[in-house]
Amino acid sequence: MKEVLVIEPHIGGHTPYILQLYGALAAVRPDYRPVWLTARPEAGNPYIDEVAKAEGVDVNLLYPPESEALWRPAGAPGRLARRLRILARMEGNALRTYREVRRRRPAVVHFQSTNVLTDTPLVWLLRRSGLPLVQTIHNVVPHKRYLGRLDHLLEGSYYRAFDRLLVHSQANGRELRARYPSIDEGSVAVVPHGNYCGQFDDPPGMAEARRRYGLPEGVPVALFFGVIRPDKGLDLLLDALALPPAANLHLLIAGKPEGEGQGFQREYQPRIDRLGLNARVHSVVRHIADEEVPAIFGACDLVVLPYRQVAMSGVLHLAYTFGKPVVASNVGSMAEVIRSGETGYLVDSADPSGLAEAMGRVVGSAEACEEMGRAARRMADEFSWESVARRLTEVYDKVLMGRGAGV
Image (cartoon, rainbow, N blue to C red; front, top):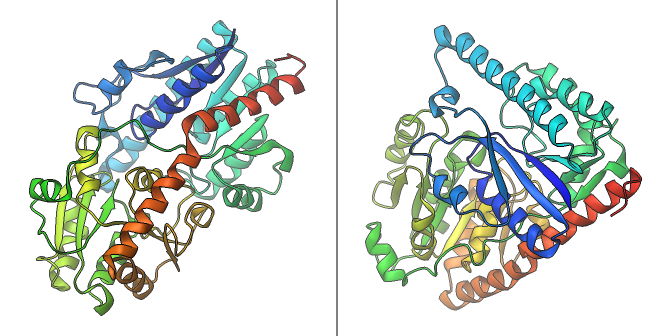
């Protein structure tokens, strides 16, 4: 049996992805044994139950627990101290990873997160030891940078250490090679994001779902779901909601702001007030537990992804799983997954008027909206985790063959 050591020291947003993917991998290719190295979760971590119920994945709690407060933005006096704490934690995790990898000698080491600041020396040490290395790049343009342009230089060196770099779409691959021309084109492979079919209960009826969140009946409702941060474009969506094509549309915002809990009130509530949208914007500004997800999606008519930049969106696959049409910015790989006019619409990034027009088109006809939802659900079936896992094992097989290890 060939052990795949999965490196992701943070129990957070990637947790469902890792458990779904490697659970499916263990089922379709039992000759591979996935082991996930991650952190001991703090009490109250919303993903504790998911990790405890993991099937097919050996979860190794190698790293010390991390406090969410560590990642919150700090004022100028505390900024340097915070960065030093983060750096010390990353360095400690890199050392633990190196020792564990050398002890286990797995068939493949697969990194699911990218910390170039501390992991660049780590991956080159592992490469020199002869271990096959794979990296999934969930975001070609990182959300966080610590050293400005130096980060970009380190990323190029970091990525060259890997046998394979995995992206979620052809568009992501093109963007990656454009940003880092020194990367060998043959080292980049596409492994799509999977759907969420079977992970959640069926949603309640729309009337019941709307009652739970205080939403009115008889009006169209759009959903903005997930982590709230500037690149997600919530400000653009609010501007679009104030335009005539979206005048009858209500908006449900469901998710947690990145960093400080008061960020939403500070950044977005003044905009809602200024645009006169208080009667049409409904907010559930907190972490949304898995048990709530079906009702959240069941309460809406469409899902809106007004992103300024994105590689691939798990929220898009959630929308398809629940049979909801999607209006999204034409960025990243959205055009490879959204069939405009069939499962939703694509609009120019940073274009509130285009967003408003597309949302109005979706909800302008109840029959057309429902047919788009059915098409979205059919498309979700094309991204089963079993098919994604098979694609991933093909990558592992080729890497091992290239290293002369056989399969």
